[in-house]
Length: 611
Ligand code: F6R
Image 1 (tube, protein in one colour):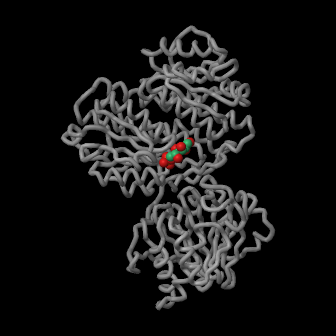
Image 2: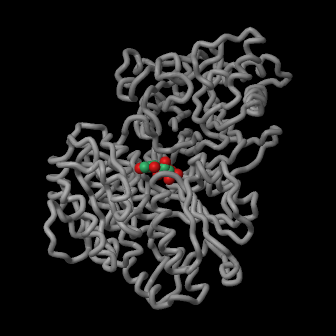
Image 3: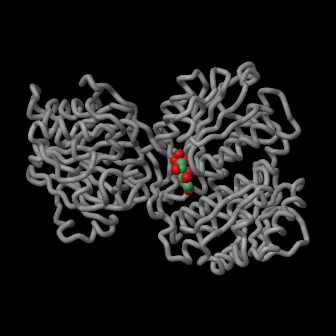
């Protein structure tokens, strides 16, 4: 939800922090701030508004420290304001803290601190943290760096909730302490300098060597050294990871927005997802998963759990698993799954899909499934993300960094990966060999077919120009096309702020058709040969009542509709990968027509690490 960045080295920290924050802005953008240490005093500048506004504040470039922390906020406790912005300091201005996450017991901690004469300047949950650190620091029996570190450890032991923290202290102008619990944080190591961030792409241009912290691992960072400690102050060694992502992947590359770039990257991202996992006439290669025929024959169902767009990919996955593996599959929103008592056991295979790997509800759902004895597979795009440390198995989509808040390339990669997984299971089960061979062939054609879809987008742009002032848009589809309707509708809502609803085509006449009147827009997806006639009848019912129609199809029919976008023919099970692209573009162009910030829609953040 929020983004945090840190630097310690020999360069001026301020421009590095601002650069990192601008790359992390997709995680929250209602206020921003930085703090550095100069001559053993902490200096902080923060404000309501975006990072660009922070960067233009008077005197920001006068911050000369070579150690610093920064934060871009997505408000949870307390409205966006200068007081509620991070960094937060303790009452004596000795410690400055930036925090991503939520402290659930902050009210009790405030009372505790007030009883020790601490006062508060903000409405945030975070402000208890620097004050608790101060409390433990002044009551410590330790000296030197252990005193600083132990005060942080004792504080973290009192916190309930989630946190990624960067802490600087005016008594230790050459050190920073960082720690995480259920919120992301990575440490990049350069030569005589370290970079800290909520995600890898934000600091990829500075280093490719990263430490990935686990929960309750503390890093005591100096310019040329990082020491790792556990909760009991025991020091341990940590492996460094070399990341192969290309720094350019986190840049706009000449596109006006990340979203358009990411939509256009889909031929590449799908190629990366496929990688060497499938080839014709050979079994799929998924070394990460060692589930065998005996286990796969024993499972009673597959549960797919995720949120938002990832859940829509999961809905497509249900059709794929049922058709190819002949195993019943259910799909549920993680926020619902985790608060009921789902009937799952050791015979259930649970698949959790999350681009970021940090979504709080999805991680909690996974832990619930594990506690009931189910085997768990995580599908994520982010190497080393939190969910990958909890799941029995992890499959990476390898779609490259997705920066725009609205998910596009991650969604198509998730569907392709689910199809590859289903093929792998069916091969092990020894079933549906013909269907599998055809599906593999079709999967391998997808990247070049996506290129075709992206070649000419003028009709989509024109239609967006015609309808961008509309208040309501309806999306319909049958079977797997309905799952694409849901995704297209979500894209429109989130980046264009247009109300829209998605219905199974046959359901419209059971109520919602009452809303159709002259001029309403209907978007319809039609990729299943067996359902063409029925679907066209459903569209006609709406056209008769005056609707404008935008149809995405790979079928041949003569009926005339306002706009027909033809996508290449493919297996119905993976058709969403192609048919969603015109819908992503429609939402994109409508948002542009309305002059909105496509990459950072209001009220949203990329990584939802709170419930
Ligand atoms: C919509 C979107 C969200 C995410 C959802 C889950 O464009 O991006 O609906 O799909 O918040 O996020 P992850 O996949 O990171 O768990």
